[in-house]
Length: 135
Length: 117
Image (cartoon, rainbow over all chains, first blue to last red; front, side, top):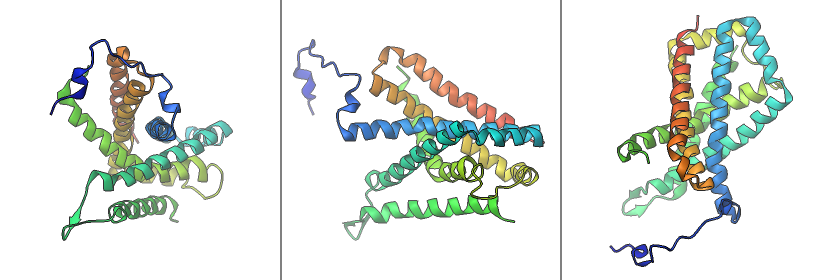
């Protein structure tokens, strides 16, 4: 296959605005989805701090828990949770696009491929909550 | 530019990290970041949580929970800077900072989980 850009003059360069992703909703959605990774990193940092505080002893852990009650930290965690849920939903919904499963020559509906992800998500979340909340 | 041969491996880490982030991080952040600090639910006390975290299975679990999402972050962050801000001339530096950060976080997680009393 020939590459159509092959026939363009070498000097032809389209300079894209740095803010190209603000011009259309799907572009913005794309950048927000990619941006969710920053909040993923934040969640990991909080977990690492928590493990560290836990290792240091009860007093340090109590101090860490106080830090979690700081309104700024709470707000950041709320925003992070929303972004990470956005990541999760977009990630699970990608599965049907990434794999087209055919059964008896017919393509399985998207929901049939995405649904197990959501079931697994619910089961895993319930398991983590159960371990942390039991007795 | 990065070596082409590394890309499938890095993509695998990105993808595995995406699954771990999607499956596990929401419930962790909901409980430890909101529900426990705000008093919606009674979280485990210090001794109980330490008991849970001490268990070898939990240590491995937490290692995976910390490491893979960082590689997921590294992959997305570098491409967001690359596509979004189009700062291609800084690509080398951005790659080093992103994957360096993920490796540093992984080493830190291993050290912290190893040194739990």
